[in-house]
Length: 180
Image 1 (cartoon, rainbow, N blue to C red):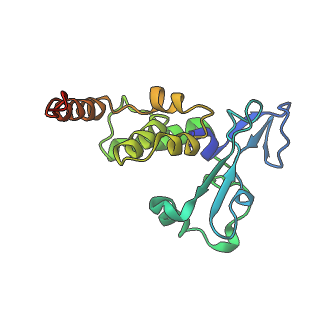
Image 2 (cartoon, rainbow, N blue to C red):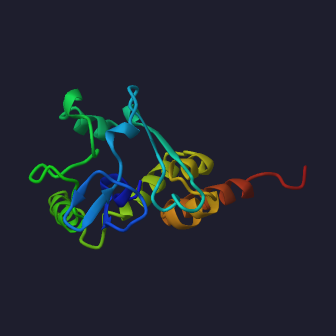
């Protein structure tokens, strides 16, 4: 998922989508607990496709161990309103604040400064390909209208792609191509 689809976005009050979350001259648009059903299935329309293809994402959060670990900290009674909130303000994160917190955590985890939070989306696609997940499935999970986008832009493991191609070529060379 894109960062702004996870934490939401603060937009001007004039933005066309309604929202009950308002702070000053901005309102928040993003995921709420209403998008997660009793079976922990998250259904959402990414903001990037909301006014174009309308592609929808459907995720089984029970299959996401790190997500479930975090959700365990949130009581069932507290699961209403915005999905992710700043514990200091009770409101969804402003992008600049979230970016600073993410960078601090990334630095502690040894993630290079050249890696941005938005790179994690491509990392998920790349890891999926490394695990032999079909590109068709990865495109659906990434809510891409075309699997070409998934393969061309988001699968960044060029080294492993090279290794797969070379293994196939070397194996092909060993075959008896003359039928003898």
